[in-house]
Image 1 (cartoon, rainbow, N blue to C red):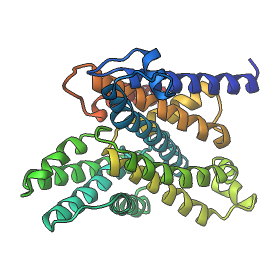
Image 2 (cartoon, one colour):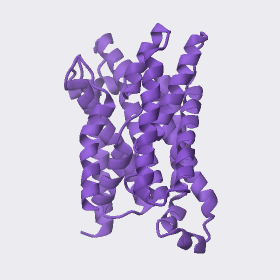
Image 3 (cartoon, rainbow, N blue to C red):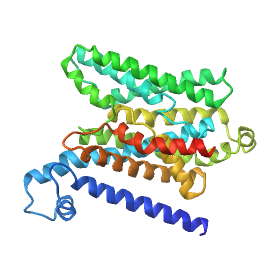
Image 4 (cartoon, rainbow, N blue to C red):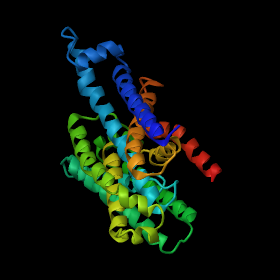
Length: 334
């Protein structure tokens, strides 16, 4: 199989899988719809469709599945950026404690806002998560100056994540406002309750950050061959590394702000994509990771919603079931 044919086949499979999962997610749920009925409603071909069915599709399911696809893609791209930055395939927003730190800052911001009688908008939530992500990354980079082994650095990131999660649980448990109980489901990771306003904010962040990441594909390719090689190719390594950190933080912060911390997607998906495509070229892996992350999160959200319906699992519970074995396999291979 030629490399070009492998790339084309891989992208076709990812696009078809994402499209099928979008359709299945639109039909599955407590009020089941046939795929034909869902398509008729989506394309306004069914003039006799009940108002309830249309409301379920357009108000509840469609915002949720679009948000899941976009956030899954953002998380996979963020994971690939961190893996490139640290030159370690185990690096990811959740593993390094970035998601947990962002979760802590969002929880604190929400509790403060509710305690003072006002509601945070999407930009404020993303800003709080971004501050938390940068805080965690700053601590990891400080540790990187003292710790030479990347494996030890990864463990430090995991410990930061545990500390932030513990503090978040304590804060949520002892919060005074009764509305704060909604934070519990969010802190476990969930795509439920998404609105078109949320989707609009997510789409804006994705439309700005992901193309900016793609523009870094060429220097990223040189950086993968070593810092010295990148310098010889004219890459400003300092600003390149800053760009990687900022873009990765923005993407992971957007995910955490709206869906809470989601585990293993940022680690497992880029690795699976690299294995399937047989390359590490950023110009190929970045769009493939985005599509792979979208399909993976749509699949996991479908399992979370339907396996124990009407009860719903936390999305991180499902992603861990499918993502953790991939990480173990990666470690065993290395």
